[in-house]
Length: 420
Length: 148
Picture 1 (cartoon, rainbow over the protein chains, first blue to last red):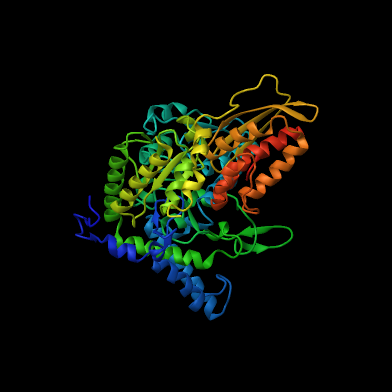
Picture 2: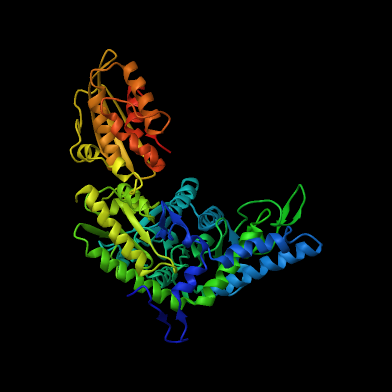
């Protein structure tokens, strides 16, 4: 793979023009410590294209007011723009019905919403929730909180040494008390792509609904709610090149309709009296208060941006980049890759000799290279591999083989300093 | 500096302490212990002190951490032996001012080699964690000290 690589999608003949894409992201021309920014931390948060940045200004400059209640022109305009964004997201995830798309602050809030609202109604003492060993804390802790209130407990599906989920063990975890499966689509610490369709099918055979944490999948692969048949699916806008502070909870309409509200307030009500209030219809039942209007609209712009490039091209390009990174890093004599599952997306996690990841991160930083170091909010994963932390390089659609080369060269600098 | 201060941060003496930490391991006769956590990077350090009156007779530590926190703990345990609680608190104050860039580097019996962390704001806590844990041990605190 060379810096000039174009990926041609066989079906559409679309060319993945990396230089044109990079030019869309203003921050990529910034320098840090006098060196070009090499941004390898998109799994934490992705950078924003000009189209998304402009969309935010456009809202505030031309179509901003509160939504869903004003009789005036601007309120109607903002409402239309926000509902158009919702429709774009429905199409993006191929949901059946736009009412199934709930705007939330991010994936974390989406999971908390389901754990709290669905959990309060459906969980009892002795019930069980199946998660996996490679969940982000945000798909563990909300279930523990509702578990403390209801008496439900968690069971975790183990992974093998490569970081791949052990499906046989998953099936064995089911009991007649299993009420929910909460599972990641792509591991944020290892990059493992889980066999999510199979996971959902197995749960459904046993009559158990599934919530999917799609944070690390949504930037890399096309996601299709109807094909997956997920019951709930969450992702954060900021990881798919949209603004921070906005995210999506998808839920099947019949499940969402049966759930009590998560928060009370304006926008989510039908009528209010001091005796009793009634709730608005979906999706507004779950959107109490003035929503994050501008960022929801700009998330629509991020979806447009991804659609224009196309996931066939994005997935193919990023896969080639990940393979290149894995190959180059593996050639370093003291490297230990953490997470080598056959199916991976966007992430390579590693240790360099016995140098602490925090020290590696500091040295890379001074070379202009942004990586994440630490436990990646996935302490059970660190425990599984008996490490305190890892260095994680993660890729977005704007990264290049040159970025990988810079990373490898700077790891050489780390070895020089630490003599390892 | 062309390397953005890296040579200052990772001086040979610091690397040497991190590779061969002094006073490392459990202490059977310690009468005060406290643990510090840095949730940001998962670093942990436990400081064991043996006090005779208000004099620190012995100081040892156990840790899992980066080069900076290991070196800082190693140097600290060497430095505080034989000092009174008050002298050690005063030393911590001066050390803290040094690594946060509030004072110019001064001779501090060797601790001044860690002054380079002042240019690495995300790493200051690595250097101060062992000191915070030692303060907690002196105060007889049972709670873990956290940097966040």
